[in-house]
Length: 225
Ligand code: ADP
Ligand code: ADP
Image 1 (cartoon, rainbow, N blue to C red):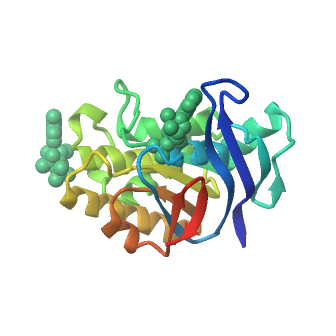
Image 2: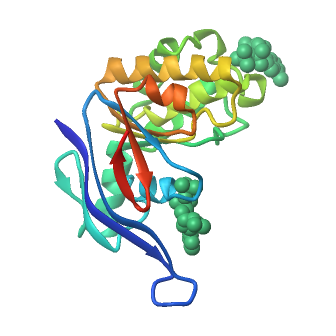
Image 3: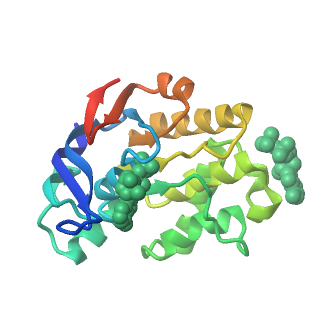
């Protein structure tokens, strides 16, 4: 079952000016429920642009974006924001956790913003932390956690509202190899447990090779791994 479908996505920054940068020239990509896909590309190839379009943070110049079967290309801002908040979780290279809140609170807050009752939100935060092996760290603030632990919490936060699509941009880019392994194992467990679709941009070819499928972004298009 497709969760993300990109068809003929094109994107040029500063079109029609001398500074025009054509980044995506017809990207076709599909990610199914329960599938974790590695997106590999040289720096500057347009990975972040592609993830932002897939996650409805940015719009394409041409092509179609379908999220959970819904055509989002010509939807208005309100519909796009609602779909993004319901269906998409983001993880970046740096965790962006709120420093003055505990790990558990960082996972509870996005649920409260989504009108989930506090008790249910706390219970879900506990389950997510348990599935990444961080039950004992629930009350720690981000600065009291190691880099690997911070990223595992960031994954939990991204999944707080049970999105169907996870988009991760170099989630282990700042971690040493052993820690990357731990974070990646936690990610795999979350994907398998939730049936989520995940698209993970990475420079780490070894990690990419352990995902279900590898796609490369080259010359503005997707080519098979
Ligand atoms: P990656 O994530 O693969 O490094 P990006 O999607 O961030 O690539 O950027 C792709 C290209 O688009 C780069 O050449 C970058 O300089 C350019 N670019 C990205 N964002 C903008 C922007 N807002 N305005 C102009 N050019 C941009
Ligand atoms: P990792 O192998 O995940 O990188 P570290 O060796 O960095 O872990 O940290 C080991 C343990 O010490 C972690 O469980 C972490 O919670 C704790 N820790 C790391 N940094 C701090 C800190 N600044 N304050 C309190 N505890 C910390």
